[in-house]
Structures are given as C-alpha cells and as structure tokens.
Image (cartoon, rainbow, N blue to C red):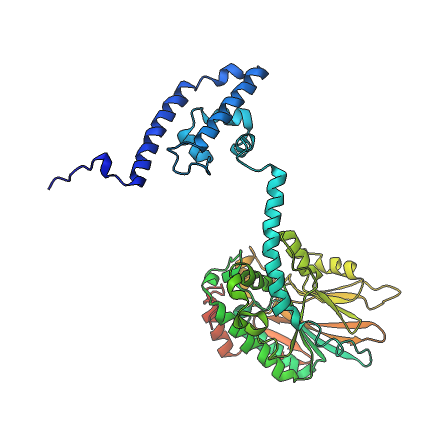
Length: 441
C-alpha cells in the first residue's frame, strides 16, 4: 500500500522547525560560497579587517537569534555557525583566532576573568556542601584518643599500615598484619590513608574489572575484614586512628557533591558506613575541606598528619617521587612515616640534635598484582607495613619495616608463607597469571 505523503499543515512543530532549519542551512551554504573570496580583501588592510570583524560579529548574532535555529536565543556554537553562518569558518580563524574568542567579541561568552570567577564561585558552593558533610560525619570523630598518645613516659610501640585499598588487600599480607598485632601488642595502631579504594566513584580506575566492584561490598569488607579483627586483637583500650587519604576523599566528595540530598541520611554518614563509633576509631584530617582546585585537594592529603607521643610524625604522604622520604623528612624535621608510594624503605639523616632522625615509607597492603596493572615493566610496589619503637623522652624512633613478598614474610623470628587457601583466594582475585581481574572474594 502506498504511503500517503503528509501535507505541511500536518507536520508537528518539531518537524516544521527541522524542515526550516534544513532550508536555512542550504541558503547559508550558498552565502558562504559567495563570500569565499572575501578574505582576500582585508589582508594587509587594518580598516577592512575591522570592517570584516564587524560583519562576522553581526552574522554570529544573527545565527544566535535565527528563528530557524533549533537553539535560538542560547546557542551559537561552532557547529551551529558552520551550519547557519554566512561567512567561511576560515575567516573566524583569521579575525578572532578561536570560536570562543569570536563569541566573546559578540558578547555571547563571558570574558576570561569573569568565567574564572563564576566557575570558582560554583565550585565553592560545592565545596561548602562537602565541608558541611565532612564536619558532621568525619570531623566529629577527631581527637577522641589524644590524651592516650600524648603520654611521654615509657617505651611505646606503634603499628602503621597504609594503602590497603579495600578488597584489593592481599589475604597473605592481612594475615601477617594480624599476626604482628598479636606479637607486638602495640600501644597505638594507625591506618595511614587509602584503607579503601572506591574505584566506582573515582575519576581514575585503571584496573580491569575494578569498576564493577560493589561499593557496599568494599565498605563491608573494610569493616568486617580490617577494622573489626584489628580492634578485637588490640582490645578496647588501645587507640586506633584513621588518616584520610586521597582515596577516602573520593567517597566523601561523592556523597556530598553527587548526592547532596542523600548525604544527610544517617545511614550514609561516613562514621556510620564504616562503624567509626562502633570500633572507637579516631579520624585524622588536617587540611581544609574547602578545596575547589585539584591542587588544593592534593595539598589536603599532605596536610593530614599527626605527631604521636611528641616524637613520630604520621602522614599519608603527598609525593610519589623516588626521593619522597627525603622530601618528607626535610618537610617535618622529625622522624616519621608515610605511605602513598607503595614502596617500602627507610631514609636516615642523623643530626647532632637528633642522631636517630629517619623517615620510613611503608609498603602497600594491597596485593602485589596491583603493581603489575599500574606500573609498566617490573613493579617496585611491594607489600608491607611498619612497626615503630619509640622512646618519647629521648625523642628516638626505631623503625622496623615489615616486608611482605608474594610467598614469604618474616618478623621477630617468625616466618610466614601463604597457605593453600590464600593462594586460591589470590587466583580468584587476580587470575592464574597474577594480573588483577576481580577483587571479589
């Protein structure tokens, strides 16, 4: 059956607009062809050049308000001018450099300074909601153990672990972590940032399959497999602190920025999600939650540090350079430790005032296979953590890095090797070749 052609009167308003737009594009193409030699007339003549600029500005305003422009009144984009403009695009490049500058000359785009101010204002509005959320659900847990780690009498033992990265933590490394907790019975335990990974709410997720991880599964894992056993081993009276790292920022910013209407629900508060009050954990954050620029957020991580027993600085770290330990030691002038680099080591720099001055970089608690996916060639990323013995009166710190290799670890005469079950878990997590494919256990 032959399809009946509809009359113009039967077209919908949208169809009529598109038909008119197509006709206007045909007319505009004819105009551009007629004007293709116009640029030869203003070359070397400043007066003609200014006149040509005026012609193009008037033409851009015509396109902006064109009745047949589907976006009339608010769009004169480069694409739209290519379709409806009466002058060749090469003239825009000649006379204005870029289409953005063309729009500025026509008054259709903010001046550069105005754009920056408006953008910064918008970002600050976002940062205010992030600050309010963080102060309510993170900062409320700051400082609860301060008297306990300010005492100066007696030798102290501190166990510090960094870069667990949630479900990507290695099962063998975790067993060593718990075993050393039992051996040392530390006076203080510090989770030094990036306990979680949060690839699903982060800008960067290079690990294959990481984006498919369940956010709830990761939070449950941190609570049940990291915080709960640690608290059970050390007992209720031992301080546990948790430094905000760059990966923790991911979820905090996401909750407050992407879902601000939901962020004030009690079940979505940071302290509720991770059981901070249940496990009596102290949060540590030293920066400014008003951080509209990426540079500000990087600096925030560097400002998140704490001095324990007036002797040991613990900072997640702000550098991944080869000389990161030396940088941190120069920065603080006090013995300390940082993570972030995933490369364990000790940098000593004794002085007359402090013959035991050193800085320790802890390894990662994430699996060794993670390095294979993030680093080209042989990876220097190594699993591990550190134990520090402190004499607060003398101001001395003795670091004891715990190096954990794929099949071997040792501490205080104890030798550890992965069990068959741990090897099987690794295969489920990373595949037979030791490359990360999934972090579900």
